Length: 477
Length: 100
Image (cartoon, rainbow over all chains, first blue to last red; front, side, top):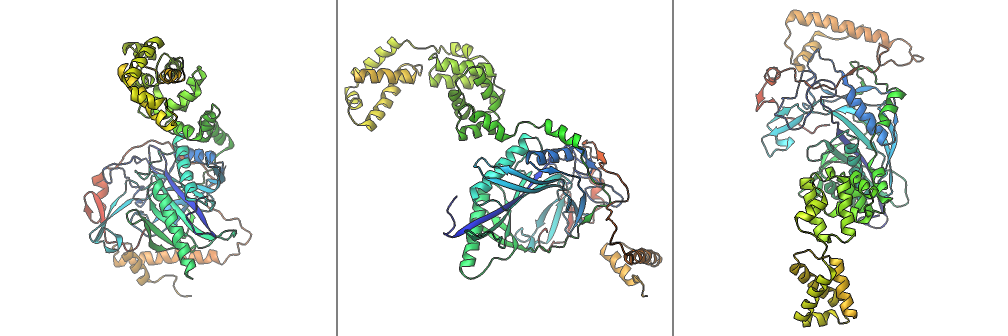
């Protein structure tokens, strides 16, 4: 539990995450769903809500939404689309097609790597809105002289994932979003890109006295565009609430905008629970009632989730951070296959974390990777040489033996190394005296000095471990 | 019983919807809208306490479309329907307040 709040106060956060689905077409029409097109080139009469148009839902969008529900342990149910009525030009038909009292996915949960379980209230389907650009003034809505509308995003399929207010720590909020993002990408439902807006987060923030289970007035924080901003925004907002209560005031329920530059949230629109969107079932759309068979078919085709993939690495002795990094880079299949082929798990994990942060690493041949690790562990390659060979393996696809022999990397004869080291000891008597002294810190430094000299003399071909052994043998002898 | 909707109210709604109606059309639509509203009033008078709400008159579910993308209408055609265009975008009067 982080301690950014004064004693006696507890943070209460629920998150709403919007994820754009990775479909080819829009939710209710064949217009193209791709990020970054020229304004209004991915638009059709359905997106514009022109009279006489009729929405028809994409089956793929429903399937990708069910995948999300299954990955979040939700119940998948018969669902109905509703019109959320509001007047704003980003939605030209003056309502957004969403789901209201009968959403597709309900009552799930997400377990975070930190151990926290966050309950999922619902994950419903809806269409995205268009993009407004406000002209004139300082670019803000209130001083604009006109607004320009690009409807490329209007009608893009979204799933809105609503959590219960189960989050007590900004770090857990970040972990929740990161885990959700990893899941969405893994199951192929969304590309989960903050920077392209395909994943957007709103945070409902409130505070309460420790020990209480009340839910106090919350503020909805929008415009949070990165994990870092999310943590900062939540901390700022919670402190603001505590300050208000401490001074005898109370926060007002409202939407607030995070301003990255000033590090503050700014008041937006007052928001009551009584917002009247006049929801009613959309008469243009029939209910979606996924059959058990279809749901089970989708479940069976789901790839292993990030949590299971991390667990497989942990079972091989990887540390939590290493496992997380490897899964994030999609290198777990490679790593596990190499371990399976007999490579030392610890070296495999180290290489995957430290030396495979490059494009194309996942395509590495697992047998080659295993061979490399075996050569290194067997003393045929030094750690430095192994790193060089590995980089070249990713680039060329050649085997480690080919690459090592092309570089002339061969295990150095120990006696050859011994004579090099003896020569260095003779040439650097002062350093050697300090190495053999009692100060561990200085000895460590001097070991570095001698190792560096050996590497220089051998053009990096010496094995650092063997060098250390010889140095210590000389010191003790 | 007073008329369910007046001719002036229909003219106001038409103006808000940016529809230009002739005098004859105003008369026609006032009559038609009045009939619709009267029907709603008639239904409202029924006791439906024991009737299950119906979302849809058809017992249909799962009407799907394959996920095939196709831009069927050119940007020029679509923009031609807008009142004012700038930089290939629809231009509308300043919007007060934020998106709900």
